[in-house]
Length: 575
Ligand code: C2E
Ligand code: MG
Ligand code: MG
Image 1 (spheres, rainbow, N blue to C red):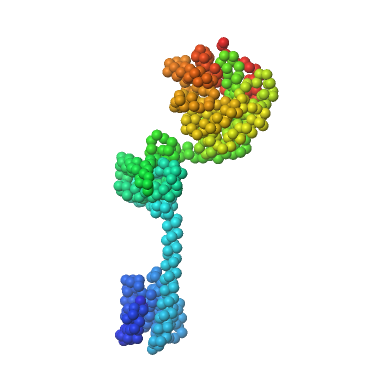
Image 2: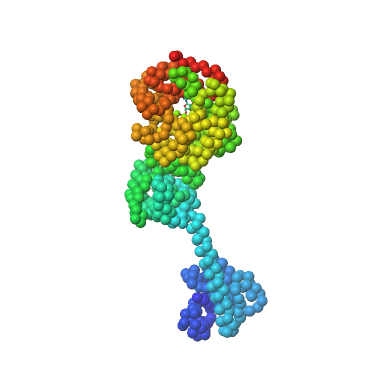
């Protein structure tokens, strides 16, 4: 569309006459304005105008002033000035104000047509370029702020929305809450049924979350199986609770994915807007922390509180330090004697990991072992403990050929048990230390054995090497008798929880007695852990318990002190 701006009445008729063919077949279209003011009004009302042909001398607003207003329009438009005042000064001014070309009156219509064609094709090219740029920008925006699988906002999109909510909270009294959700069985479904189906699961959940009957919300997909919902105008904690209930129900409903139907569960980490730190990222981090708690809790929903964040930061520091401590072999092995309750002699030692930190309280294995298990660091850590414990046992064998305790007992975590190189690592540690399998015992907790039924094969291979296998912390798990029967184990270690009050709690006494009977029947050795009173040994000996371990005999000690214990062989056993 070409806008002709001229106060000369004749011009309209002329244009229509000359270009009638092209107007009829739709190639060209003209609109007419009498002056700059009218032309600007028409431009504001329509974005179909590609080109302007303007006179200079006009009432109300002249052509040169009109040109200087064209900047305000975003769509590419080019103006050609037609004037009887074709002097150099006017041409320069028109060009400086963005005119594309300049024609003089009387109009040479042949020249005008060439100019129109040239200008229109230039404008078309500009429009095409602009269009392309626009779609590139839109694509970029979609990639940056939206999840490509579900079409929901992604992390960055969500952060923008959180920022808006924070802003709104500053300006008016409105409250919001951020919920982070996961899809509990996602990885099982993914490994069992493949990417295509697990993607469909995510899409289905995305749709359900979008259509869930919760007002004023933004739904986002974060990484993998994680979603987030930003709720606006949350009137009260009980309203929020009711929304959370709805979300849990939504996950419980079975989802049909092609041939199969699956149902899942979700954990929810919730953050309300009373967080101290008002950065959008802080809300997301708080939700991360809360969902982490929810994953390890019986409650499927956990509300964030500040103490969680401090703990999370502390954990992260420990994780980094632990990795370094393993690499630089700062982790030491301490040894706690396992004593024969009949002879009072040290029958073996349990190797226990210690992490000495200069000028600080040592971190307990109860803290760093679970962390190592979660992060996979237990594999290098376990190897370190295993090789050092075996090496120490080898040294003791050399040093005390006659009175050396016969067994070194090493704790083994679940990840180690299913690690491919376990047998290789054990063989290497034993052979470097000059030991055979009889000298080594591995302690595996009841729950680990129950959860890794496929590990029986590994246990059998360990037994072929005559390596002993103890069920550690026995009594706290749920081993069934038939299961115990089927395992190639050699001893049970009764958990400290039952020993510590065996002298005053008939329940503990009964449990301990039953475990000892059970192990006698299964022809397993039995070790009582956590003996720290004389009375404990008396009772245990009466119950026919073979071995004991506890502070009464010795705390876990470093290698030099353990060496001194072997040579002394004196224990305060009342026999
Ligand atoms: P655990 O294998 O059941 O080890 C026995 C724990 O009871 C040790 O705690 C020991 O110091 C403690 N203990 C022994 N006698 C007494 C007593 O009379 N009274 C009291 N109150 N405690 C006693 P520790 O060394 O803190 O180890 C805790 C747990 O950490 C171990 O329990 C074991 O599960 C794990 N752990 C320690 N070292 C390693 C390791 O090298 N590898 C693996 N996988 N786990 C380890
Ligand atoms: Mg143990
Ligand atoms: Mg134990």
